[in-house]
Length: 115
Image (cartoon, rainbow, N blue to C red; front, top):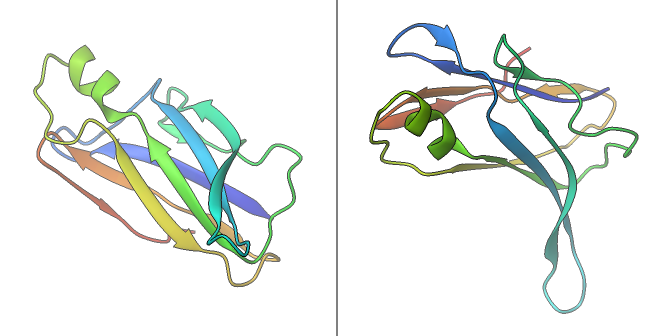
């Protein structure tokens, strides 16, 4: 099914457009494992990004979404506490869709599994 995300600025109740995102997949190995970038993109005008996986298959493993939030804060003339946000999550069932939203303000953020 896939992975999607969106960003909402909860201080103003609006989507956050044009933020760079990266998607990483964890590869376990005898040396302890490592993160590998498998996708990237930007949020659209509605704050969404649905194409992070591209043609990469979804696997049962850990993933990390990297949100470059400092770009947004700078464009809004805000001093943000978090220059970036990383959300690590586990895919248990690759046949399901995983929507990972980011609710953002200059001094905090929240995430959850959406639908």
